[in-house]
Image 1 (cartoon, helix red, strand yellow):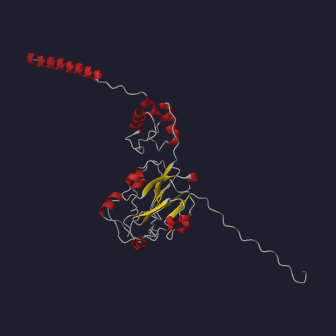
Image 2 (image 1 turned 90 degrees about the vertical axis):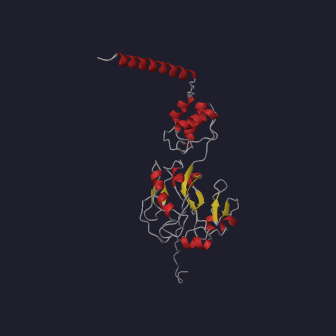
Image 3 (image 1 turned 90 degrees about the horizontal axis):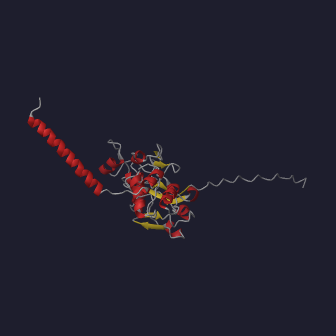
Length: 292
């Protein structure tokens, strides 16, 4: 049988537990924060990817920010795009301004053929680990190291490694511009740019900041900072800093003059329709002299 001391202890603990529960209930009721029901409504229309591409920890944090601000001027869901933002704005009772779609681009054209290999890496297959150990397998310390961290980071299957070039390839039909690949790349060669009208865009596919001769020796496709592209651009969309040209997609008019002027092919045009090659004109039959 239980002793009186044990019974007393059990009773005291029970009473103490009940008293603490009452105190916690009172405190919770007094300091209870009422959450705006619109947060739940916005979260329901979100894609639920929780990718962090919007700059928040997840879709609920994004929804909470929209409700607190009362607008969507500074917030944008890259996965859902304009359609989702329209629904978010409808919950808030406002209208959302449509934004141009973005897409990830790889600013490196250092293929296996263009960049001769000078080192052999035999370690963990990780871009971050490899980049922390040394500059890379080639003479270019700014280019892609080719381990595919960006492919693993993309949860939408929009990235793949080309076995021939050794570079990542972006499927613009699957890319949501969430920015995970941008944050993952230790070399910073992946950038989010305006997708452009009908998928047409012009940019410099290089990130090498070495001087022209050194950059060209490391990679045949490197930008040499000659500035020819900036000189022919009539829209002031191109700047050359640290021996590297950069095209501002907000100013570029897609005239492609820089592409034609670039001596190394670092400036590229993507998504433009390919003009058909004209067929040679058929020669007219010759009339014999006696018949003439």
